[in-house]
Image 1 (cartoon, rainbow, N blue to C red):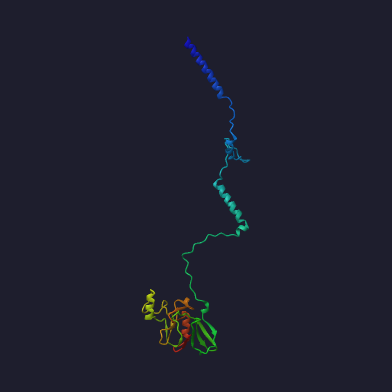
Image 2: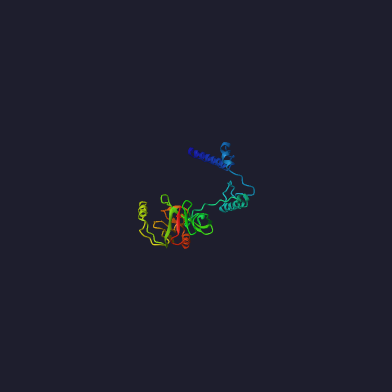
Length: 262
């Protein structure tokens, strides 16, 4: 009898407790209040939804979204169009430096134009038909009648190889062969340059298109395959001329012509 009474009291207590729990479960809870110190930094990171934008259907807080790639492209095109329409911006031109072309040809070497042939006044004592060479000024004069002379630019002997004197043309040759003197062969060998004992005439020959030999000396008035050296002290004592100039002189003078080198 006593056990039945205890069991009944226990059932009643459980019923009352479960009812209390149920009423508490479905009761309206008080709002959660956060301290400003904790909520302020987080709330400041949110942005208000701009007026006119659609409401998130789920009611979530909407953060600032990144624009789509197409929107970025439209913005860039609009910015470029704005810059191109600005006159002040159009005046400045930024160009990417171009690499030098590997196909570019080396610049052609040329002689000074003042050494090109020309007719000049002459009031010296020499008779027409005489050749006068001014080694200091690098000019060759062919004296003509009437107080004029035909002047040509020449290359002369480098330091230590200059000379002066009077002689005559003893021989004329077209596209002459070249026999370098033994002294020149030895001198160039010491510099590491090997000269041939003989070279046939031609465009590669250092004597060029024509040669006028001076007496019994080793010196000549001759052409050159290096016309840019005209007007300089470059030879071993010979007088150099452009091929076209020495050809013109060759046709104007004869064997026996007097040559004065100063």
